Amino acid sequence: MARRALKLVSLAAATSGFYLYSSKYLDPNDFGVVRVGRAIATTAVITYDYLTALRSVPYGSQEYAYVKSQVHLRSAERLRDLCCANRGTFIKVGQHLGALDYLLPEEYTRTLKVLHSQAPQSSMQEIEQVIREDLGKEIKELFVSFEDTPLGAASLAQVHKAVLQDGRTVAVKVQHPKVQAQSSKDILLMEILLLTVKQIFPDFEFMWLVDEAKKNLPLELDFLNEGKNAEKVAHMLKDFDFLKIPRIYWELSTRRVLLMEFLEGGQVNDRAYMERNCIDVNEISRNLGKLYSEMIFVNGFVHCDPHPGNVLVRKCPATGKAHIVLLDHGLYQVLTQKFRLDYCRLWQSLIKADMKRVQKYSRRLGAGDLYPLFACMLTARSWDSVNRGIDRSPVTASEDVEIRTNAATYLPQINQLLNNVPRQMLLLLKTNDLLRGIESALRTRASASSFLNMSRCCIRAVSTYQRSKSHSLYKKAQISLLEALSLWQINLYELFLRLKGTRLGNWVIAFLSRMHHSLY
Image (cartoon, rainbow, N blue to C red; front, side, top):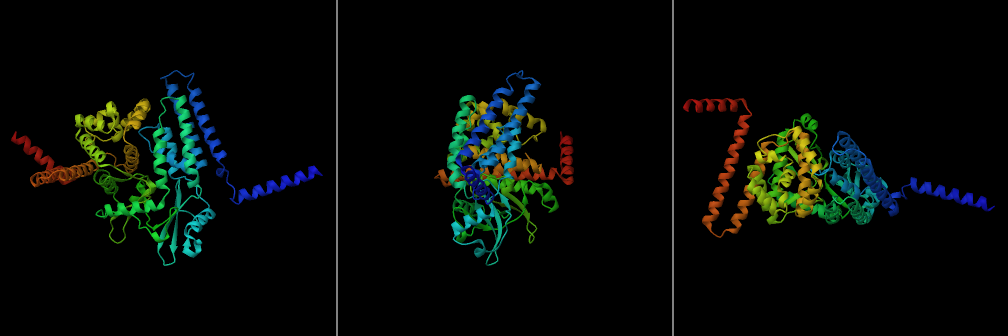
């Protein structure tokens, strides 16, 4: 009798458990022990693999390089799977790691980059629950239509297309329901695991990544903060007619739900989309450079997540002009005036190949004796290219290989550098890498126009600061005159580069060259 009762209880428990799981009321990820256990197990397996796989292989041999690459690949795949399983904060950190081309081996960055497009989705029941809790109404009361399939899913939220009762088409960004509760615990878990790994591998220095997550995640999880950032940058860059930032509908926005104007387009790294829609890739690359140079050097308010899913391009049907649509304004870096001006002067020195000033301003930004490495990380160029002038020679495949090889060789020094530079620099390095990835996809990387736009912004920023510190009208006029002259020289050089690329320009240059030889 007891055995029969036990069977009935077991069957009932199994049936209810299956019902709960299939009905989404119960998710293994809701249990801290599952998330913690999975993270500890993955960290242990990766650590053991690195400790044992290379033990019997001769250091420096071809076999060593091959085995090390395989360990990197296995570890990256395990880390990717952990991020996908634990979701939320883990995916966010994984995406950050995937952008660190200057720091991590290619096996890691290539594997983790998929997290930008393969973030898990919340179910419609979960989305309805968040909207009901935050807006106090059901979806059908708020919208005429609401698409169940999201336009995109990210680490912290997903976006659905919907139509309001008054006919406006909107994008509805809804936070994954469990992210808020899990984020602080996840960061603590990562911190403990990283400290443990550092005990085994003393050269392993990634605590700066946890520090950044602690500071930035609470801001990214507040969608009202994101809305304010969007309005601020839209006002700040209102003179850029090629830039479109979605309007925020505050009456239906909360900390977990954000309603925006719906703007569509192709991803900025989709060259085929641009060719189909007759969009000039060089114009897009040039305008993207203008946009970020203005944010970094002039305003000191920088959108720090320009991965392709957040930057769209489209052709305006009415005017035929190409627009850049900037999405996801949750993560911004505010630069102090001192940092911004030092960074301006450092880039001016890098463009002019003025090594004394490169050393001076790199040291002021915390690089110390590692300033050559710092210059290479900022520009993603070899030290030889930096010395020759980064605007004078295009990036080659062999130089890319050299940079990746050196990144692996100088990993302890890179980590030391990242721990020494101001925290503001960390997100800028990530932003630089994401922008370079877009330029590589468009095949416009290291074009002279990007450096010219940076030069213009640096000149304007430094001149504005100098005028603000001067009390003499004569001195202010002198600064303005020098600024105008410098900008005129850049415009003249840009005109020369454009002419050089045309048949008429080549004819004029050849004619002037012959005239010069005949005179001398």
